[in-house]
Image (tube, rainbow, N blue to C red; front, top):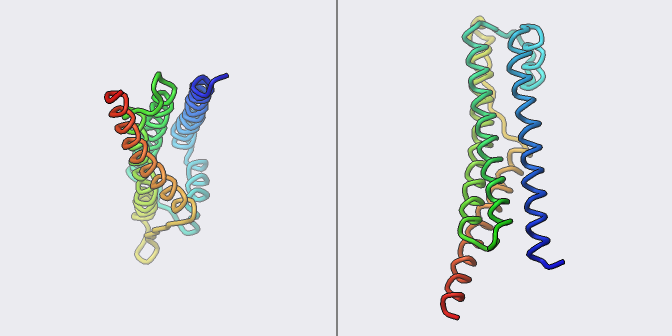
Length: 181
């Protein structure tokens, strides 16, 4: 089996894996938004676990609605990143895997992953603040966190960005060589 056939097959497998992961995340998001939002106790338990909150929470309708909107925004960023990766693997599986199209989608995916990580940091802070804003004075919480998972995600996004830039240059050189010959 030639390398190009192997690459196309692997690209299709990776597209399927990304699609399966996106479906898994999508069903999780729908489950979160439908079951936890409807049950105040389940919602509070989930929020306390997700954000490591110990003190009192003001689960007012505006705070819950803002939490749902911000969580939906975070899921949207994740889906944007996964879509870019799916398109990137589709470009790799095309007739010419070393193409500007593949480099462009890799570049977009890296930016989407940076937005996802930045969004998770900022949105978590806003959600915690919104959920404790109705608390009495001295019991409001402002929590900003940056952990190894966010650092690793940023590192991987930076690697994707640089690889995309190298891929774009290589695609341009290859196109020039084809025109020359």
